[in-house]
Every structure is written in structure tokens, then in C-alpha cells.
Length: 223
Image 1 (cartoon, rainbow, N blue to C red):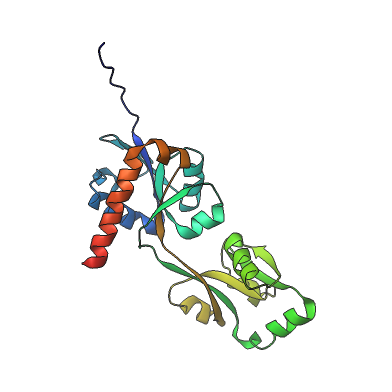
Image 2 (image 1 turned 180 degrees about the horizontal axis):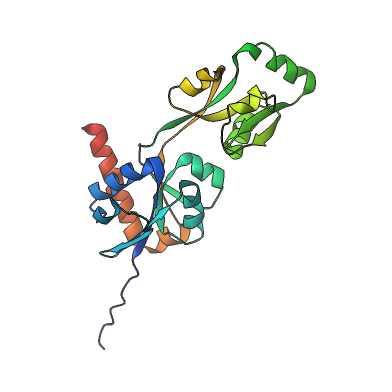
């Protein structure tokens, strides 16, 4: 009986646009994937090359695409994974795209916010990242009312909308310029290689790619 060769569909890989994009292309290329056409994508969002299908995604949408089968695997910031709260498999810490989440408050209010919390029993915290913020305050046993914003988080305490903020910072310069000071660290986040739970079980290409990416990360750390 003649053997039938079933052609496999392309492996669909999500690549986050924005700050993670260049490093994501670099690590895929180092792992041997054909990403050259993605270097200057223009407005094109899907690229097919040699058994791969690359889709360019908004970073916050990556976990949703992976969890729902829109992508088999992808690069994604750990913060986006936590915020999306989707069922995905984290396979490799890619070690790039590092960012720091902090708690900040008005410098002149540093001695009064904790007193206010003790009196009222609740603290208002503004953030773009409600899940990360809630998880942090739950971990320290503090009850908070979260005010979710989508930009200019620094304005919230300056306009008396919130007592504190939870936000990403690199140097703290923007916080200082708005008379805010860091009072605690929440978490550090790096890019991760994630996969759809069903896809990773049945598709050895994902597992093999995870191995290659791990080797690239290890070689850079040992360089």
C-alpha cells in the first residue's frame, strides 16, 4: 500500500510589534528561521516563508491569539501574559525586553498615604495593569480600589484621582519630573516564548523551536 504524505500546515508564529519587535526578529533569525522579509514589513501583517507563517501582532493581543489558536506560538512580554490571563504555555524566558513595575506616590504625600489607608481601610491605585496591581496588593494584604487608565498614569495622583500608581519605569525620570517617587518594586518582566497548549502537545516543531531558542539565549549569556 502506497504511503500518503500529508502536507503540514505552516507553523504560525506571532511576533509582537513595538519595542519587542527587533529583538524578536533577531532571536528568531539566530534560531535559523527565515525572517528577512519581516525587517521592513510596511503595512503587511502576515508573511509566509518556508513552512512558517509569521503574523505581526499588538503585544497585548499576543496571548489572546495564542490561547485561541490564532497563532501556534509567539514571543510575548510576561506582563502581557499576566494581564491577559489566558491559557498559554510559557516555554522559554527569552531574557530581552526587560522592564520594571513599581509603585509610586506623590513625594510630598509620602508620610500621609499610609495614615489615610489606616483610617479609611482602602487605597486608590491607578494603573494600566489591573491584574498585576491586584496580585501585588493581594500578596501584601492591602485592600485597594483600582482605577484603570490607558495613558498618563502620572496624572492620577496629581489630580487626586488616586493615592498611588503602579507603572513601568526604566530610569524613574518621568516619575521624578512629575514629583512622584518610587516606594516599592512590584515585578520585573522579560519576553517569553509561549505556545498554545494543544499545539505544543501535537506539534514537535514548537518543541524544537523552544529548544533552539533556549540554546540561543544560553549562548548569549555565556558569550
